[in-house]
Length: 82
Image 1 (tube, one colour):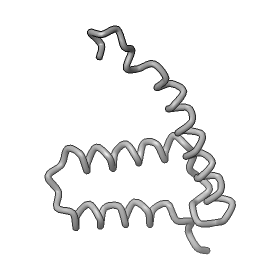
Image 2: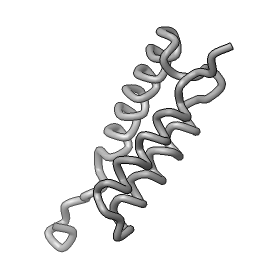
Image 3: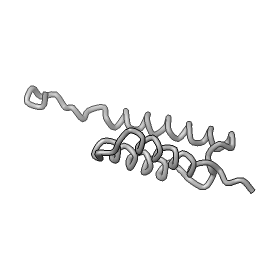
């Protein structure tokens, strides 16, 4: 594609911005509903998503390990009960 003069990265910036906006909206809605802790922001969520994705993509982990790891990650996002 590149050899044909097609810029494969064109439009990615716009796609990334829309994805970040969608994730931020989901995060804020979950925080307002009290289902996600309020002391994290978009950068932390993106870092967690990247880390989980990289582990799933590059690791030789069985599905059960990945499932349990995601459960721990999601539990960590829950607000603490006082």
